[in-house]
Structures are given as C-alpha cells and as structure tokens.
Length: 483
Image 1 (cartoon, rainbow, N blue to C red):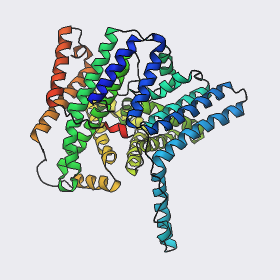
Image 2: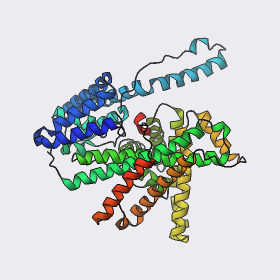
Image 3: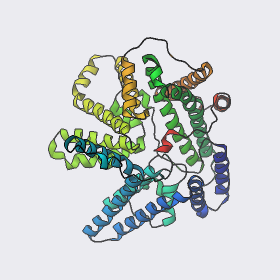
C-alpha cells in the first residue's frame, strides 16, 4: 500500500478518525492493529519474518537487562545482533555474496586449473525480501546496543515494542528511530490538537508535491534517457545525472515529509531525515544533512566503534573508519557493486576533506564568504551527482559507460523529450529550490507556514492545484521502498 495511493489515504483517514475516538489507553493497540494490517496488506505471509526479528530482539533485550553476569549478558547481546544480521544477510545479501565468491573462485580455477565447469552454477536462494527489512533490523540492533550499554532500559511491554518496530508511517523507508526517542511516545495517550494536526497535514502536502510534481515527473524524463543511454550525447547524460540527484532528493525527502506528517497527525514526532543537503558546502556537511537518521546510526554504532578500537593508528584510525562506514552504508542500499562503489566514493571524498581540512581553512580565510559558499556548494553538488551515476545504474559497466560518454564531450543538442513534462518539472524544481533557499536564509518569509492565515491558505490551495494539474498519478513506488 503506497503512500501516494488513494487506498492509503482512505486507510489513514479511518486510522486517524478511530484513533482519536478511542480512550488514550487503547490508542497504541489501534496503531498496532493498523500497522500489522498495513504490512500484511502488501506481504501477508512475510509478516512472519519481522515478527520473528521482533520476538528475538525483545527476548534478548529483556534477558540482557535481567542478567547479573556480565559474560552471560554479552553472549545474549551478541546472539541478538548476530540473529538480526543473519536475517538481513540471508534475505537480502546471500545471492550477492554467493555470486561474488563464485566469480572469484571461477577466475582462480580458470587461471590455475583450467576447469571452471563445476563452479558456473552458484547456489542461489529464491527468497522474497520483506518490506522494510533493513530499517527493522537496524532499529532492532540499535535497541540492543543501547540496552547492552545501559543507556536505555529494556522494554517490558511486548505490544509497545512491536508498535515501535512496525509503526506504519516509518516501517518502509524510515526514518531509523531510536528506542529512547520513540518508545516513550507510545506510552503517552494523545489528545486531538488542531495545530499539531495542521502541521502534520502541511508536511504531507509538501511531501506529496515533491513526490508527484517533481520526482515522478523527472522520472519520466530520466528513465527515458537512461533506458537508452547509448543513444544520447554527453550533455544530455550530464543533465540527466543532475536531474537524477534532484529526483532522488524530491522522492526520498518527499516520502520523509509524508511519514513525519502522518506521525504528527497521530501525535508522534519522528526524527527529521533531511536538512536542505543541496546547500552543503562540503561532503562532510552533506552527510550531516542527508538521510540523517541512517548517517547518525552508522556514526554512532560503526564509525565510533571502529575509531575507538583502532585508536593506536593515530590519524589513520578515523580515515579507515570513514571508509569502512561508507562502504557498509553503500552496501546497505542493496546487493549490488554499484552501491558499494557509491559508498567508496563518499568515503574517498570524506578522506580527502579530512586530510586537507587545515589547508582548506586557510584558503577559505583568503576568499570572500560568498565565493566560499558558491564554490563549496557547486563542488559538493557536482560530486554527489557524479557518484549517483553508480547509485542509479543497474551495473558497474553501465555506470562506467555513461561516465565515459559524459567525458567524451560528444557533439549534439540536449534531449528534451516531452516539452510539457520538462516544463512542469522545471516549475516544481524551481518552487522547491526557492522554498529551500528561504528556509536556509530567510525563514520568516516562507509562505507555507507564514504567520498570516490568508497567505498560508493561499499557499495550500496553490500546492493542491499544482499537484492536481502537474502531478503524475501512476502510484509509482518511492525509490527508497526497495531498500
């Protein structure tokens, strides 16, 4: 059930109406029922897998806290972490590693033994990947880590724990919620609050605008170019790379706005996941503003741990930790070497920024602030667009071919495709960047949350009309739903 479908709008309307009619003590039960229904609506049989993860994690958390013996506590903790990782590896990455290892073995076998026939058929599993499995396991592992460290108590109410991991606005594509932030909200009944609900609906409206008017409109153009990339010249492919970055941002941040808005209508605060990343002046700043909840998860649970364990390495400790962290973050997106390379490119950029931080600071001091800002934003955005070629490509070969064609600087005019599609997309992108510019620099002059009611309502009507007139209503999946 996609957020941008009419059936979901009907589903959520029923959930919200009954939610506020129920006694506060029963509200979380209704949310649990709604979340399970939402999950089972799309993948009926696969509900068994997240429920298994939830039961194992809940029991491990309970016995970690209950155990008085440190060694036993550690074994239970490791068992819970290994169980979660095993689910993720088996369901999402088994075939990837199987194919990779078989390819390596085939190469060695062919080179040294001249007989590769028996290794040409790798052992593969034909398993369906459950909805939101990456987000469920990461939140579960984060919970176990916090319980083991003693920074968060184990949850005693099993129903509350299920609701935490299956809460339908965030289950498919996050944000990655921490237990200490979300679980206390479940325990508190929610009263109908007009201002909070309006804020939630406003977030949803802005999210639907980004998804339907910008992301899905750009997808019509981007897919037409990338599906026939061998027939397009360098300027068209470079232009498409930029539009793919904007599409991904509009799609994912649009989903996040809708998720935050849905939760807000129900009285919950989810973690913001984006903070205008395209205004970042460095890759380091970019990853503090892009997919914030996941970046922070890797920072806290991977980067920090690796850095501390290798502290004897001096400056090479954070460098190694950065690259390992972003390789894993890239692989988190899916079982494809394109995502690994995407992560490696981020790690490389962050390493260069780390090693040149002093020289860059001296250079910035010699240049005007406006020049520093423009150059930093341009380089950061350009590098992200370049790295995203691997993210979007189906294979490393396709990505390298596209990059090669871009740098060939072949002649020819830019491909526009449907004029109306491009025109509507440009309108949407212009509104997006103007809005974010004012959010970044002049928040008092925003229209959607302007202090004057007539301005706000006029903005609501305008956005609704733009969605109706320019939106693409093909119920296309959000990009991050597959991760």
